[in-house]
Image (cartoon, rainbow, N blue to C red; front, side, top):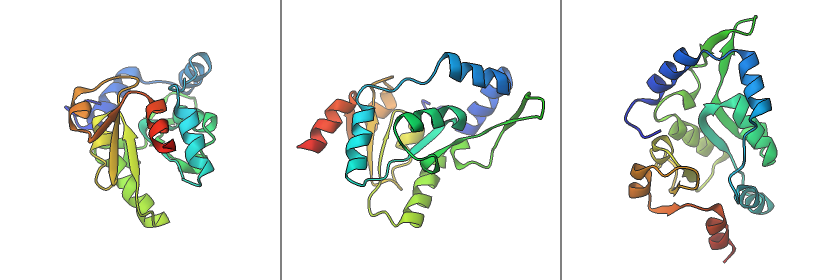
Length: 174
């Protein structure tokens, strides 16, 4: 997340150590469901009420990110994340390395694809990591977010840095 190691290499190394089974992933989600950062539900609702499409582009895993998307009423077609692969018996079989989010620069590739597919004039990216920041460009604007964890590289290089989604929502409502 800090950008010192290429994302795909870090992901490969971490998963090789963990080797999560399908059952372990399902248990993790059931026992530790993803929590929403305060203010994100209101921000997404505000945008959606104004017909702004919201996408989740994550270096995390689709099986987890989909839970966040459903809590935020974001269509699953608007989720771009890594896919874990499992053998028929549920043992870890790797991850789909063809997903653009599996590599450094992948989030930028997704944004470029979205611009081409939907003809968006402007895309704003909000994120807390190096892979989020490097997606601008092709994103037109990057807002660094430090509400969960502060990464100094992101804080130092983002044109706009926030630690609270309520702050951003307040700016939009003005």
